[in-house]
Length: 218
Image (cartoon, rainbow, N blue to C red):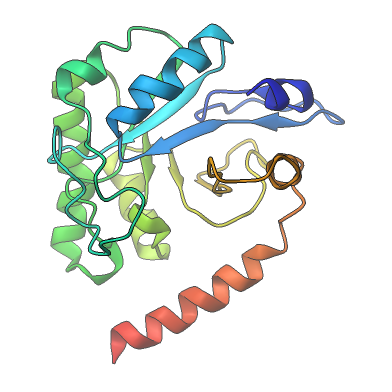
């Protein structure tokens, strides 16, 4: 985070104003709401006054990530925060968003089930946290134009993918890309990521999504 502050200006993920040209900005987001984020990341971010967003699953509080099937997956034994633990993060630095109800791939659900994931997760999280839930992160980053339209209708003000493209490129931006960052990154790899050096990966991501879509249809 010290390296991030050296090269970037941190922003809330719902930032919607015009950015100053010639400066570099970054927004910190966490999907799933693992307790390890509360234990390890939140204190570091609060100490440095860095805003951050956590995308929660409204039907998976205090659960293990049951959507992870690989036995050797590094997140398999994580546990998701409870409602009380989430609400204990009492700071204006935090923005809570929805990650759906169950971490389902919305692109393979029926239209009605996808609407339910979008709308009911928003309503549940607002009830649990007494906050306006304005942001949504697509589980595993899978989305399409129809889902984007449904998210807008459900009342979200911005949705997030895992497409590796620069964020905040337009004032009225609704679909925002993100770059994945792992604790296993080398320092130079992390630096290149926050400097935007991997923007070319969007083409590989689009090809991967196309191939996965063909498999799903078959």
